[in-house]
Length: 401
Image 1: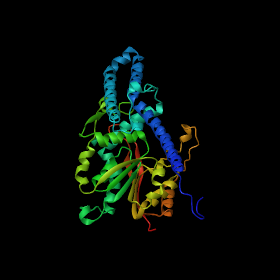
Image 2 (image 1 turned 180 degrees about the vertical axis):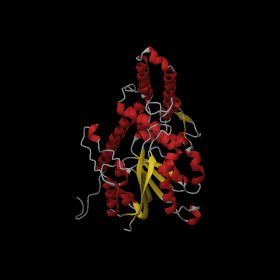
Image 3 (image 1 turned 30 degrees about the horizontal axis):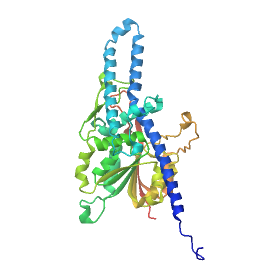
Image 4 (image 1 turned 180 degrees about the horizontal axis):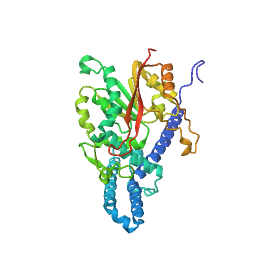
């Protein structure tokens, strides 16, 4: 019997049961992660088949034209051959990317299997997953090409300027006894904004939920060691709004700046970067994230929320008193039309910019700057169609708690 008023000591059997429960939960989580991962691997492996099918559609429709009309467009035969070559170049990039996740140093649940050992390696890829792979190519051009420098200057530029003006970066952290400011970048995509924060001496952490983005950013940040190491063709997949075939087929060299070279000079002075995989709400809504960050930088992010109030509450909670929230982007709410392509009842609360500002103030984010700026997004600069958003640049200071 246990002494009166004392709690029973934990038994070895009880410890074993709890350990088994934790291990089982971890195994289930890893299996779910593995399933999602393999779906993306198969979509990337299926890229060339899907893209070549589109080119064959062009050939089929060209062949249906009357001979007299074909004679006016004889160069289209050459264009089709060029398109196949562009697809092969893009395929080579994805092959290198997947190969980088096949080594023994990769965690088993994130290791790319040999296609010959994957029973579903040749399973058909859904149109949605095929489009996500094509979207990666456009995002690579946006984040990692010299061609998109102007676009990044429009969106990343204002954020970086505000961070540099509002946060002190010690020139010699050890001598000054001060750590570099910690900057969180949720919705980090392919990681360029995170890298640019680190280059400026911040301790930057990117957060991303999409495995499409996480795999690609990991490859770019850790395995691309030369400027222009790859040439991709992000605009080959559509015939719309091109001024010439050459513009449509043109190669876009990536990366314009190898991450290892970009970081080399700042690492010695305290700049650092990391990427955190997971859902923003689950990761940064945890109690241990309270008062941990000097700044949160959101770029084309807050409209990805099911509930923007939740996002703003978490941002306010993560910031230290006096910390800075810098936001840039539109309010194109991602889940607003989810019922058109998802069977479930997805929560989506759409808000005006005035509502966003009001809620921010209510949760302790005092707006000190509000400007409207135009910005391109994943734009082909040579296209006849470019998407330009009227974006809100918001800067807020976390109130003292």
